[in-house]
Each structure stands twice: as C-alpha cells, then as structure tokens.
Length: 84
Length: 131
Image (cartoon, rainbow over all chains, first blue to last red; front, side, top):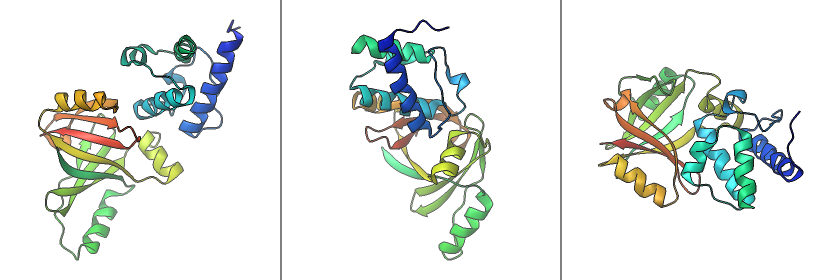
C-alpha cells in the first residue's frame, strides 16, 4: 500500500491525466512505482513529449540532470513537488 | 545547416515509391532501401528537388511510436532532416535555444554517421545528420 501524501496524490493525478492525453491511451493508471517498462507507449519520443507537457502544465522547468535521473513516475512527482 | 529531407511514415515503401514515381511523371531518383536497426524501420529517399529528398519511413514494429501515431492520429509527415557540419556543436547550440533532445544514433542510411532527433520549442521534430 503506497504511503503517498495528499499533495503528491494530487500531482500524481495531474501527471496521470497528462500521460493519458499525450500518449492517447485512456487506460493508463500510474503509480509512483510506474516505469517506462510498464507503459507500452512510453518510448524515447513520447518521453520528451511527456516532460514538456508536464513542464507546461505545472509551469516548471526540469534540468537535463533531473530528467536523466527520472526512473519512476514517483521521481517525477517528487521533482514537481520540490518546484511548487 | 542544410535541409536534406522531409520524413514521412508509410506502410508500404514499394507502393509509395510507385505512387511518387507516377506523380513525378515516371522519372524519380530513388535510393536503396536501408534497414535502420536502432529505430526498427526501413527508410528510402526520393529526390523531390535538387538535393532535397522525401524520406519514406516504414515502421517494422507495429507497437512503435511511429506506427502508433500513424495509426491513431493519421500523422505521416513528421520530421525535417538537416545535414550539419559538427553535429555535437549543433546539438549543444540548439539545446541552449530551447530544443529538447530525444535520441542520438548511428544511421545505416548515412554511412553510420551520427544522427540526432530533437523537438523544437514548438514540438516539431527535427533530425540532424552529421555531414
């Protein structure tokens, strides 16, 4: 059972919507443990589209080091929260 | 930096070649078909103007992003390819200008020279090819 905090849960929900929109796949359900291996459409082209869509949606900017360090959706959520 | 090609997705390279050959009045400069291992596609270049090509890209993995965007969204023209003198320098300069790096690879279609895909700030996909 994930111990995710409420602010992070809200961020995760927004990120989930972004994934659905960008990947055009209604059935995506993200958890903080989700990786690219778990989502068929999440490849290198889609990854950049997702990062840019998240940056625009949240009004933030990731550094290239941050992007390289993203292993899971939880890493993304934590980085977003640290900038809000 | 010189425009080299416009990349478009096709489902049947041979059929597309014949359609473009007919469109061009029966005469068309066509390259060999190259298999690009990294990308799981085959590509072929049709010379549409002097030194400017249409790149026919046929995905061989039905679950690849190219096959998917073609199937789901009907996108087929999807990138501009440019030849550049120093690809690493150009990548660095473009990233400073807000371009987003997607991937680098060495292409069978360009004598295994280094290539890179980047998204422009407008999210248009471009390919750089080491000249």
